[in-house]
Picture (spheres, rainbow, N blue to C red):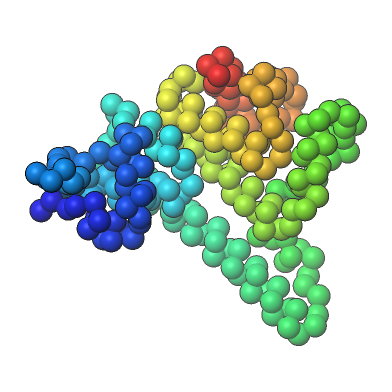
Amino acid sequence: MAYKVNQLAQLAGISVRTLHHYDEIGLLEPSGRSEAGYRLYSIAELERLQQILYYRELGFPLTAIRRVMSHPSFDRLEALAEQRRLLIEKRRRIDAMITGLDRALASAEKGINMDEKDMFEVFGDFDPTRYEEEVKERWGETDAYKESARRTAAYGKEDWARIKTQQDEINRDLVDLAAGGAAPDDERVQEVVERHWRSLNDNFYECPAEMYRGLGEMYVADPRFKATYDAMHPGLAEFFRDAIRLWAAGR
């Protein structure tokens, strides 16, 4: 059965405009056209759209989805299995957040204070202020620091939890690729680097390519950063630095 664009939009719960956009950027092209010129989608396009929507739910940008799904090594079964794993992990984090919020609501309704440890248990060992004094001393006069301070001053626990989730996903994907033998110039690795760079831009400060390359160098030069990344996977600090160098060179 061939679906017209409005039929597919209704079936998938998205807009016709979204399908047109996916076609225009080469992400989801129809398999044919009707005599009247309408886009027609086969079961193969429905399966592709299903995976696109899973990736979107996981927070992947469209450019990254297109790169991943157009890669010669892309395997639908493997991708589905990986999407399932990522969604289960996302559900685990959301469930933990909901549990924490339920405790906070219950405490607030009873007019009692939560135990300090319980308040922040959901955030694990993530501490956004860990290096605040040192960062201020080293970069306090820079525009990047001032912009970061301006943005983060308004952040609450939900904002920091969202950022932590982004960072956890980036680190996990980077480890998986490095452990799987991918090279720093692998498109999948470069997509993770792109997400990391975009997270900095979206959450903290505008980060030009040269500044970002400098951060990559610091991940190896600073013993604490190096120890953090290498604890995730041996040699990950150098791997990440090399990937960032390549990304910055291509900007």
